[in-house]
Image 1: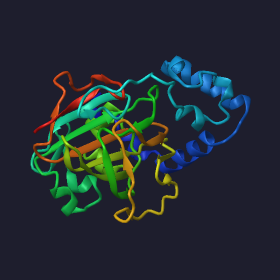
Image 2 (image 1 turned 30 degrees about the vertical axis):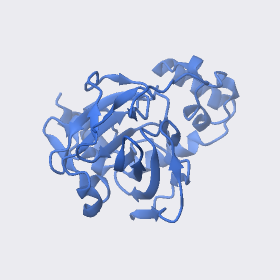
Image 3 (image 1 turned 120 degrees about the vertical axis):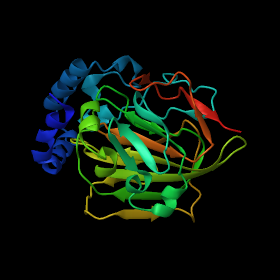
Amino acid sequence: MSDRLAVIPQYLLPKQALTALAGKFAGAEAGSLTTAFIRWFVGRYGVNMSEAANPDIASYKRFNDFFTRPLREGARPLAEADYLCPVDGAISQFGPIERDQIFQAKGHSYSTAALVGGDRELAAKFENGSFATLYLSPRDYHRIHMPCDGRLTRMIHVPGALFSVNPTTARGVPGLFARNERVVCVFETDSTQIRGPFVLTLVGATIVGSMATVWHGVVNPPRPGVLREWRYDDQNIVLKKGEEMGRFLLGSTVVMLFPKDTLSFNPAWQPARPLRMGEAMGGALR
């Protein structure tokens, strides 16, 4: 079956309703039902609880508490690199931005302006730059960390669809990551090795109940259906490389944008390669 045919049912599903229902369940304290579901989930997806700060499945009152669990100290040492991988997951795609086009899958690209919610001035900063799209599977650690030092300047919540973001859907749905609901976080960095803006985008998906950042808390819900923006120019919100910046309440994808001539990717990176948060993503082009 072709990827286009495989994703047809997703166009028909009531994705918003399913996601709202899943969000309610994930946030509910359902006692033994919650514990039984977490045990099933751990077994079904092979979640490594030995890495968790709290490996006791029965101690999690809500599924969200389990899903966004912190790791034990030392589970993810930070590499000596200018840019770090911000998540556990797998590489969907990465490489150069061709003018304003981000490669999604064979036959599919989308624009930087579409990704960031239509702001062409912001998108222009990444013309011929670099991008990385990283997929988080259900088994992965779902907190997101900073790839480098950054000062937050803006956050944009872009309403959209809630297609799955698995590899089959990425190959079958045109412009997937610019169609789905997303939270665009814009940073400036000014260190010895790295200068300029970068974007870290949290992309929602079917069953992804919400996304949250450390400075705002839960961004969605609410889902008012219109673009929302917050500016932080008058605040000094600075996050260090490797520091937590947000989390998915049920998993999804991160898309990062970097300006031209700033990043050289780790030579070991290849599409579909598994990733661990804190490993080397690349070096600064000096």
